[in-house]
Image (cartoon, rainbow, N blue to C red; front, side):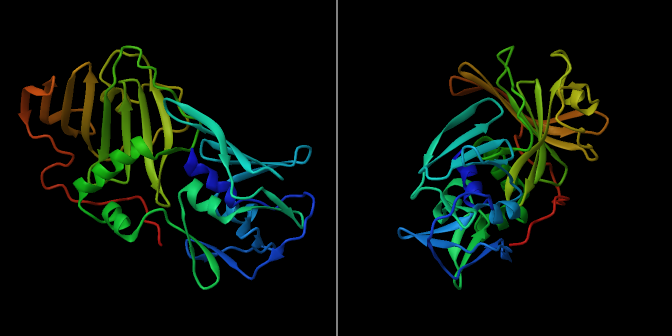
Amino acid sequence: MKKLLCTFAVIGALSVGTTAFATVDIGITVRSKPIATDSPPIYDQGRVLVPIRAVSEALGAAVDWDAKTDTVVVRKWSQTIKLTVGKKTAATETLGNNSSSSGPISLDVPVKAVHNRVYVPLRFVSEQYGYKVEWKNNTVAIESPLSDKQRDALYTGDLAASRNLVMVAMFTGAHYEHTPLRTLHEFEDYSTAFLFPEGEALRFFTIEGNETATYYEYKDDFLVATWQAHFDGTIGDSFQLLLEEKLKDRTGPTPKIDKPLVFYSRGIAGDSSTEESGLIGLDGKVTRIGFEHTVGGSVTDSSGKLTVTQPDEVRKEVVPIPQN
């Protein structure tokens, strides 16, 4: 939720009342590209404030203005933020796959209306949306949330290491392009399977609880779920159901599966867990390479070697790598 609020820090030219504040000769860039705006940053109460719409459009956020309540509503992915002129808090709502959250976020200074433009504190951008903000030659530079080292590891590093990074990111920092579908766990199945196109780490499917499929892609250094579906029924192998598109409740056209899929899955039931890894051919044939079953922390059954890559697998991404 916090990571989304920053969108507001960067969003909006809106018709509202006017108050006088000191303007400052500061430019704004997003990922090193200058942002065109007729409203420069302002200086108020020891804080630099930036115009909302100018930055939001550069980040792809949608903005609505309610003149009756002097409220800005910003929407990006499945997250919504509301800011009201004169208030020192922002109302937020974030919809997730299996949960949602909402609540107020405090601002350093109240939201300002200056010369028919809405302004929010500069710090709001970096802390709430996930971007890094730096001062560069009298310019507010909004940069990637990833360091150069992180980007190298993610985009061009070892394939196994990159896949492990994105699997963690799926649980801790993914965004949703559409309203997320819920995984109900009707049969108490708490398994998660990751399916990577052969040679890739930057796009992949997950299958949760044997009932919900999600397709993730990296976009501008953020992990985004761009498609989801529920399986048509709970009987049958979920891998096969995905390949045959026996799905319902889709959030768009099903992504094309044009390569064999390397899979890694882990399921938990009580004090036991099961891990598997292997390859799924385009014909649906599943070749299991590794398996391990654990009860109470002790391995009770295993075979092969658990791995998130195939032997001699060569990295070959198709997702464009964004420029810094």
